[in-house]
Length: 223
Ligand code: 5RP
Image (cartoon, rainbow, N blue to C red; front, side, top):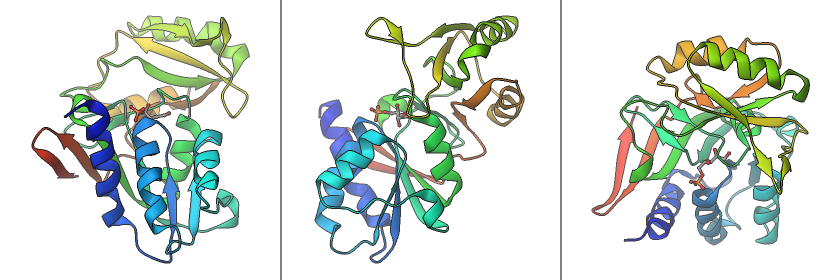
C-alpha cells in the first residue's frame, strides 16, 4: 500500500470514534484531509466541527460541514489529528503544517485525542523530525541561541523565500539535533521561554489512541 492509501485507511477508521449529534475537533494536514473526506459520509449526522486551521475550515465548509468558533462551544468529545512523530507513550511532535498552536488549543478542549498516522510516523524517541516551534518574530534570534545551548539547530521556516506567517500571524522555527527523551519536561521547559507561542511537542495533550496505518491494516494503539 502507498503512504497515501495508508492515510486514507486511517482517515476512514477514525469515523468509528465519531458519535452522531456531536461536534468534532478537526486537525490539519494530508492525513486529516483524508479524514475530512471520509467525514463527508456523516455530515448529516454530526452537529459540526471545530477546526485547527484555515485550510481545514475551508475543506470542511466545502463539503457542507458547519465550523464553529472554539469559544462558541464547550468541551468536545473527540479531536482527530495527524502527527509528524509519535512515540510509544502517545507523545507527539506536530506542526509540520504550521498549525500547531490551534491544534494544541482544540486538543486541550477535547476529551479524547485520536491520532491518525501511517507507520512511518512511529518512533522510539521524538526528535528525528525537525521540531516546529511557533514564535513571536522579535524573539526568534534569541530563541535560536537558546536552542543552540541545548544542542539544537533552529532555522526560520520560509515560504516563497520569505518567513512563513502562521494563521496567528507568527513565525515558525524548525529545530534539528534534539533527542526528546522526556517529552513532558521538554514541553514544560520550552513553553516558558519568552517569545515561544507553542512548542510542537504534544506531551500534555498527548494521544489517547493512535490509529496506525500499516501494510497489515489499521493497528490501534491505546495510551
Ligand atoms: C500540522 C500537523 C500535522 O498533523 C502533521 O504535520 C502531519 O501531517 P501529515 O498528515 O500531512 O503527514 O501537525 O501542523
